[in-house]
Length: 215
Image (cartoon, rainbow, N blue to C red; front, side, top):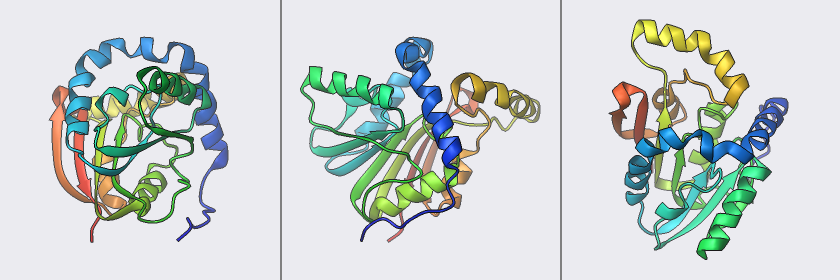
């Protein structure tokens, strides 16, 4: 089945997101060096959960996950930013890594229903303009029983810190494109996934989410 047409997407917000990440492409990896000292281990854990089949990576960025892609899987990786995607393509070419790269908005995936056995994403759904639309798209393109693995930072449950994150969020979005106050675990459930497991890190700021599309 071809993907259905969608009319509920804020295309202006999608273009703004694309421009924000295009502007950051030159120094994108440098900015996140401190975080990557911690996140690298979690990326390896996430991708270690996938073995075989067709896999969709949503938000490949500059290709930070390329070293962890499972060798027995056929990976398709997409991103909304042409400039970030170009950096990922250069890394894949340099490593001789067989990955299919595509310029695409997570809110409108150009794949038929049930195209993938698994999907994975790392620090992406903080930036998708409408996360529920994007998550529903991931669910659509997964096969029944397909696994969805996410590594995301979320809003803290602490009342004072959560309030502060809400107040600072507009500034964070303008500066980096990332929302710092999203309830991504709740959003994954709202999108129709079954939550299998949630592991918390950094005092609950970072979550490793394992979810499944029902049969």
